[in-house]
Image 1 (cartoon, rainbow, N blue to C red):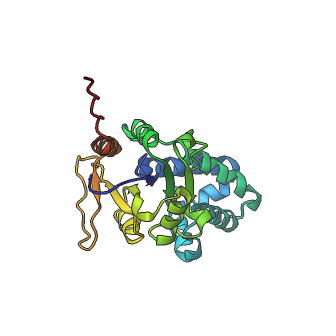
Image 2: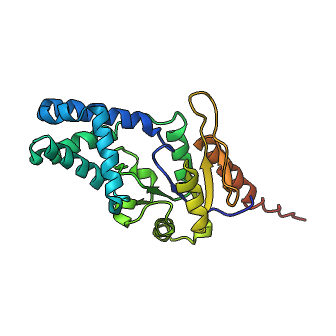
Length: 250
């Protein structure tokens, strides 16, 4: 093993589960909810128009780039206001979205690998998203939870990585950050002084992305969390104390 790992920081979306199906489900659920509770809003903002409004809202409010929940609520407020809807529906509409946000289909290897990794090392979740791991029944695998919303800055900012290291009680060089995104995860972690692991899963065509950053490369590069769990097991075996010599008696 070329370096020691005392703890893990772990990205969530597109690392434990694919996010595009979640995003599509959110859009359908929210559209259905608005059709039932605010038809004028649903008529003015069908799925494609609501998506465009969300993108416009995010572009116009960079101060909330670290807070997906605030941006979602702001999008809903705009949609209701512009359509003459009841602004008092924002909380209920957001809850419909947020419930759908947690209906995820995990990658086939993710849950078993997460259990293996968490049994070996402390893990802190490190996410720019707004998933609630307790709501998903995964909190017991984690020692700490670091979200950009609470921290006030998002990956790839160094401060959020360093905050996670502090929560884990480890120096940055002792922590391995694991995630799918080349910039937000790998480059961000490396610049903050952490070790990095790029989880580069194959797409629906079986094709994996190519690394395109010349100045920084991931310390580890796997196509699944299972491969990382296997690597951690092998590294631990390689550094375990050798058997003590037997005492010989005369």
